[in-house]
Length: 78
Image (cartoon, rainbow, N blue to C red; front, side, top):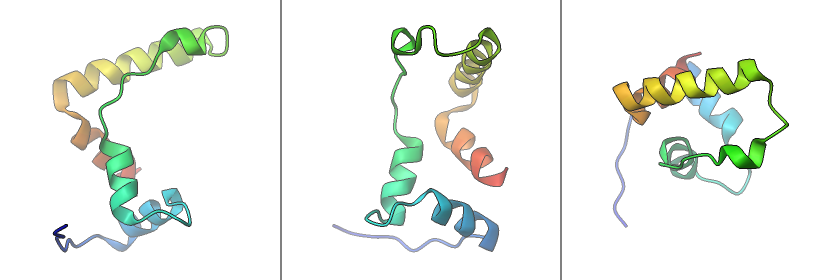
């Protein structure tokens, strides 16, 4: 398997490190953050408030417009 070297700001590195499990690589974390997976809302029935459901719907709409990688990058920035 080939690999690439990338540069990260210290703050981005720290955020990735915080998300990383002991047995994971940074590649694993990035793949986990950027994988395409649609949540099953039925699995969450009764556990989320209406505000949370509305927020999830809004995030999905934004992802459809902007793409998932931009959302992952923004999550790392915050």
